[in-house]
Length: 440
Image (cartoon, rainbow, N blue to C red):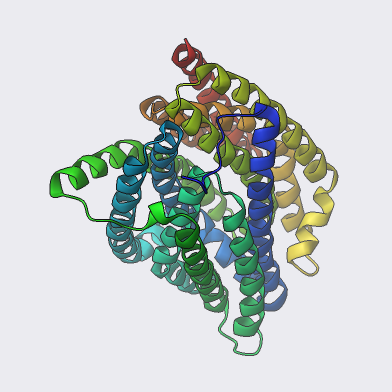
C-alpha cells in the first residue's frame, strides 16, 4: 500500500484543501470543454443548434449522474478498505467494480438508446430542433461506456488518495475535445453530432490513458481471481452503496427534466437563454462536486480507520471551504450576468438575454444552500448510510417538481428557476439532523 495517500493524518483543513485543488482543476477543465462545446455550436451553427444541444443536456446529465453516483459508491467502498489497511479487501473491491461497470455499460447503453425518441417527445422538444437534439443525444448515449470507464478509474484513484492523475488526463481530454469540436463541426461539417463525437472520443482517450497509469501505480487495482462466493459477496456490498447513490443522483435529475420540459414549452428563445445560463451555472455545480469528491475520500478513509472525531473536524473544514467558494461564484455570476449570453450567441435577442439573466438572478443567491446539501449528503453517504441521502433525494425531487408546476403558475419562468433552490433547502433540512445523529 506504499503508493496510497493517507488521508487519516495531518490537519484536516490543509489535507482536504491539498486533495481538493486538483479535483477543482479537473472540474474547471471539464466545465471549460463543456462551455467550448456550446460556444462552438452556438457561434458556428446558430441559436437553434444551441437550443437543440441544451434541450438534451438534462437527459445526458441524468445518465451521467447515475454513473457518477454508482461508481462513486465503489470508490467509497475502496476508500474504507484502504483506511482500514485491508489490502485483500481492496483487491476484491477493485475486481468486483470492474465487473459491475462492464455489466452496467451494456445495460445503460441499450436502455438509453431505445428510450431516446420517447423521452424527447415527452419533453415537448420543438419540431424545429428535434432532429438535431436526437442526433446529439444518440451519439452521447452510444458513448456511455467511455463515461463509465473514465469515472470508475478516476473514483478508484481518488479513493486511494490520488486526485492528480485524473486531473492530468482530464486536462488532456478537454484540449482534445476542443480540437475535435472544431475539426468535426467546421471543415467536416458534421453538425451537432460532430460535437457529440468529439466529447465521446476525447473522454475515451482520457479513460484509456488514466487506466494505464493507474494500474501501473496501484497494482491493487488489477482485476484478480475471486471465488463465486467472494465475488457475489463483494458485488452485493458494492451494490448496497453504489446503486442507491446512482439512483438518487439520477432521480434528482428527473426534477430537472420537469424544469427543462416546462422551459421547452416556452419555445426556442427560452431554451437558448436557459441553456446559456445553466452552462455557466455548472461552474457552481462542478465546484461543489469537487469539494464533495475530496470529502468523500477523506470521510471514507477515516471511517474505515475509526477516526470519528477527525471526520467531524473535516466536515467543518469542508463547510468553510465550500461556502467561501459559493459566495465568490454567486458574486461572479450575478455581477457578470450580462456577459453570459453573448459568449454563446452572436447578437442574441433581448428575450434570450432576459431568460438567461432571469435564471442567474433567481438561482445564484442560493448557492450556499447547495453547498450545505452537498457537504452533509457526502458525509452521511461516505459513512455507509445511503438511505437517508436517498430520502433527501426524494424530497428534493418532489419539491422540484411541485415547484415547477406550482411556482410557474404564480411567477412564470422565474418560478421554474426558483424550484431548484426550494429543493436544495428542503433536502438540506432533512440531512443535517441525520448527520448529527450519525456522529452521536
